[in-house]
Amino acid sequence: MAKMTANYGVELVILILFVMICPSLSSHCEYWEIEDFPRFVRKLPHHAKEEFCKIHEMEMDLSRKQFFEMLRNWGRKYSVVVSCYYKFI
Image (cartoon, rainbow, N blue to C red; front, side, top):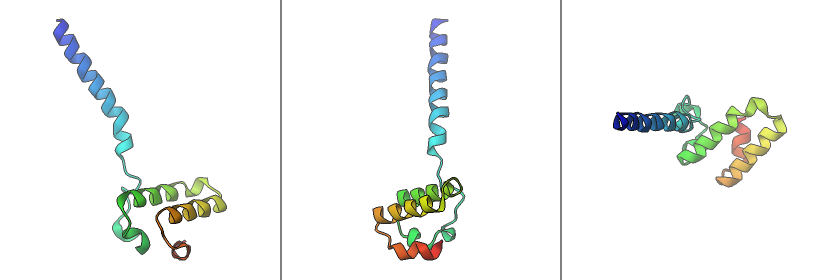
C-alpha cells in the first residue's frame, strides 16, 4: 500500500510540474505567420522574433512613447536599422 501511495505522489509531482511549466513553453508568436512579420524581422533568430512579438503584445498597455522606446531598444539589441521599423509602424 505504501509503494502505491508513493507512485501516486510521484505522478502528482510530475503533473504539478507539467502544469507549471507548460504555459511558459507557449510562444508569443504562435499566431503569427511568417508573412505577418516585416522583412527585417524574418531574417532574425527565433528569440529575436519572440521578443518582437512580445513587444507588440504589450503595445496596447504602453504609451506611444514607451512603445517606440521599446522598439528602439529591441532594434539596437539585434542591430536592426531604426528607419526600418518606423516604416513598418
